Image (cartoon, helix red, strand yellow):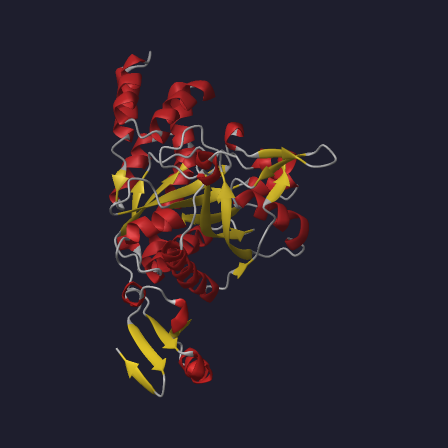
Amino acid sequence: MSRLFMFEKPLGMRDTLPELYEKKHRVRSLMEKAIKEWGYSFLETPTLEYYETVGAASAILDQQLFKLLDREGHTLVLRPDMTAPIARVAASKLLKEDFPLRIAYSANVFRAQQREGGRPAEFEQIGVECINDDTVSSDGEVIALLVESLKAAGLLNFQISIGHIAFVQELFLQILGTEERANALRKFLYEKNYVGYREHVSSLALSSIDKQRLLDFLDLRGGEEVIGKALDLVENERGKKAILQLKELWDVMNDYDEQDKVKFDLTLVSHMTYYIGILFEVYAGNVGFSIGNGGRYGLLEKFGKEASATGFAVRVDRLLEALGGAWEEVSVHCIFFSQERRREAFQLAKQMHEKGTRTVLQDISGVKKLDAYTKKFANTIYLLGKESTNE
């Protein structure tokens, strides 16, 4: 084995060193606490799933799936998201009664990258799923919980953009006539290529009125005033129903007193094909990508249950990037001891641990460079010979 290969990692994989691990653990703990306070129960699913079930249902591109074969020749995948595995569990084991389920998770997911470019192939998500409740109130609950959990993690500067996939579908089909032409236009929205969108609209064989409607669609961003503009733009009942759901959602967010954290962006679309209604993304300062997303989906039907659900997932790595230096360093004490005072050192460390103080025990004979070692600790205690010295 060459030295270069010995220290290399597979494409997109990362080591989590102690300082980063500590930050991730603190974020996870704070968010989990907030989520549990809203009555959501955490579960775990296997890292490996069958390709024919979870892999096919996940809506992640096939070339992004990590695949392998088991001993019986079945194709397995490393889970590419958590929504599909939870839908499997809910449909097979949890939806025995006709009542809503509130499920949460914190887990790593895996998506293969053709080129790394700073994009991880393994990353952690924290999220929730509210299953078997098709009311707009449940959509509002999930978004409000997203706001609450991000604040609990220490993030204050963020904004949630909300759209409705059914509105986009109905407007495009109404004007363009076919799903193929609508998909071509949606691709520009997903890539947020608005220049390309405008150029494509200009090239279409449409009336000047319809072209203007498609261009006016790009302006449907903002607060409650967007509702009226959208109702004027769409003509069929399904499209209007979608907008009225957004109006109801705005009222729900007002009742939660979280309207300042949300805005409408009716151009919002997703590559996840299982979304069927309200969807959203959350953005934060200093991060060029969304740090989380979610929405209403119909994925449980693929597992034999007629039930819709809504949920969110937060990317922990991007959340940490958004938090930046907002974290206080956790102080760690160190007790240096000589062998004759070892028992005393152990007893002192036990007392400090009981008070919640992080404490390292270090035999002084095992330290080669004392000055360099003590720079790591906020406070040091020396138990050497007969007397102790604190610094």
